[in-house]
Image 1 (tube, rainbow, N blue to C red):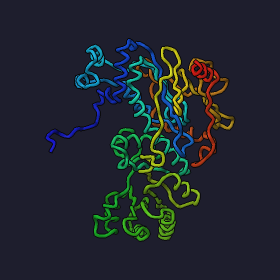
Image 2 (cartoon, rainbow, N blue to C red):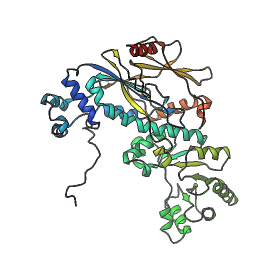
Image 3 (cartoon, rainbow, N blue to C red):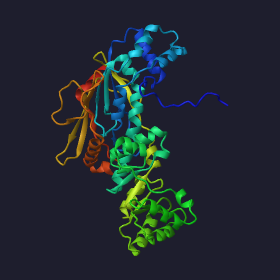
Length: 452
């Protein structure tokens, strides 16, 4: 038996400095040792390629990433422990002492949260002293990748639901307690109506919803007793879970209750057929006002089929498939050096080519209000004749440039972005590839460096 108390892996919010990979700190130490600590570097975050069955992404996670980036720090205990690690034993004390007061002091430009984005486009641009810019790589990728993954999945589900309300039910299946909160935020940002996650709802001020558990029904002698007891305790929000035993029998029982009822929920079986049967039963008992909610490992292709066949389902609870993005569970999001002391640098590895120089991304919109194409250009070149610049300043010298938008404003931006998608991109499966080009100056600079 371990005599030590349990180790909590929740980080100290005031000492997030070590939330990084070891090689970020060894690289920083190496820059110091080689007299490179004063050099200014620019790194950029982008996604190399879209996951399978994705034609776009929704950028998310920036608010939390920036909020914590400005608070990154090392505690005294952390520094003392790191000094004893084998990787750092040969380093002089003058490397460690500045860590006690180290704070991120760089500039950050980013595409606003809720924006539809595509592979190869700069999402975040970081310019800072080289060791600092290196230090924050792991933190930024970890802070942005998962929220973007979930928001992108949620957007597909929103499109497939065709306007019917969606409820995020994934806390128990998320990859850790914090992931459940991030997923709740990303889903709401992308258009979900509410979450079942109590703490996420409380902190983010978003609607919280819930129905009943199968265990509630099992805890009573009969299903009728369970339904009647629930309706007595929660008369203003009675949603009855009808599939603990026999779904349609559960619906018949619910329809005969002399109690207010807002909805029933079907959580298993052939949801569409059961919903049709449930609608007939409810209507026959004068309960046409009672809504039918569906849940149980639902995802966008199923919802699209329900929509196409006019299944009488009024809303959906989505959990596992959303918070795990099971069909495409990872993003190739990377953070790459593109400029050092004003000199463009690049990478030529097969499948991992990068373009040099700090960049801006411009979006062209057609007369119909739909996105036409995007252009990545050098940040210092004249803007094109047409196109909205997407990257905006977020931090200057480590301090916020302006207040961040509210979650409601981000949610509205995402809704507007999805509405402006070209019609082929709204389909769950499409061969259409949105045009993303690079400016002539960027192409010429890349070619010059390759030739050299």
